[in-house]
Length: 83
Image (cartoon, rainbow, N blue to C red; front, side, top):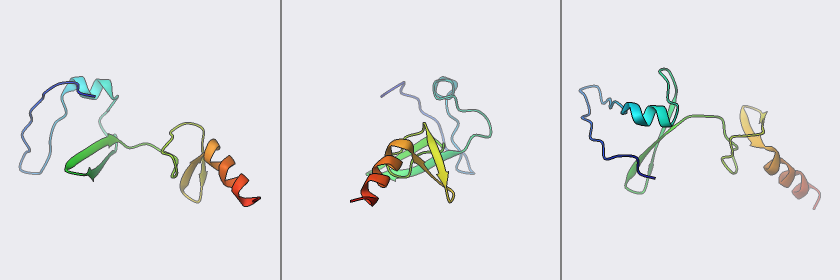
């Protein structure tokens, strides 16, 4: 998905300001945590949120020992135990 061809300078502390259009589209608010990782030759940033450790789903999560698992993956895991 491409929203726009924005260019921003990195400041002396390594910061980049997201354009307001992007912040609005992704509901990024001051104080939100951003997850930053490298994928191939790209730097990926996304709003950090709780997600299933197996499939990255963000809905219907259960917390187990500080990790999250969705109901679907939990059912699969429970089925695997009985095989």
